[in-house]
Image (cartoon, rainbow, N blue to C red; front, side):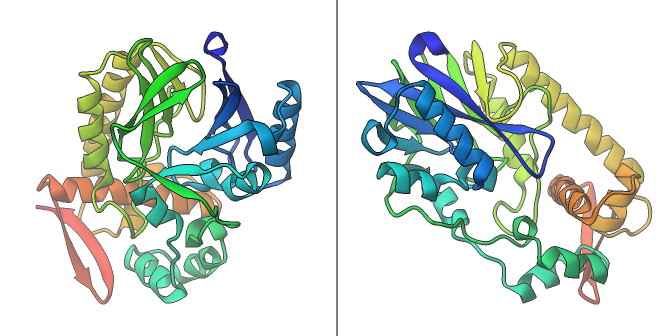
Length: 315
């Protein structure tokens, strides 16, 4: 990517054993940023080192900030980055709405109780800023909307904004048709399975959306994928097929565990069979909810409510 004036900036994450990949691109005498990382001292130090390495004065040289989606590990530092650079920030309309979303304590508790989550775990999660969801702070002042089909110069290449929902409803990837390069954010990764989840807001059936998006990607020519996590990779079509097969296998396993009447929490425990911290169980519960909503949509399971708790059973 460096031959096109584009550089990967990898920022360690405090929550997961992982880094988030952002991109810094020299464009017509200025620089643009793609994704900003999570808000924190490590992110600030990483960006400062990258700017120093490339001789960049943030307040003078950064002209635009492009985002793939609203999650904190990609968007969280955007407000600070904009304070440094005074550059406009580009985000899809749906992601902008979600970036301002906040759970009320009552709504949060009601939803997770309906999943069968034990009361002690609900109370613990209410105080977790990632689980309970609060607007990004500091929030950027200058927001421009990205729409599918918009064209952007990133480095020496022209990229098209492509709506690729599933991981989030308004997730944007950036595609260069000449070199067949996809900047994929969290939508499409190699070593890990993209996190498709439902936590009570957003897309009601995110796994169905994600699989539809993958099938559309099968019509694309993609020679390189520059993801938000994990390695750059070149076998895009093979990876699409791997992901489709992975979810087909997971659905078969979910159906095998859906014996009797179970809550989402009970099914998550049955599927993963691990003793995990509450936050990790919250992550797994979101994934399980996505499976269940997909299977209900496919007509293989039905959900019914009893005393404020949602149960699932085979049809």
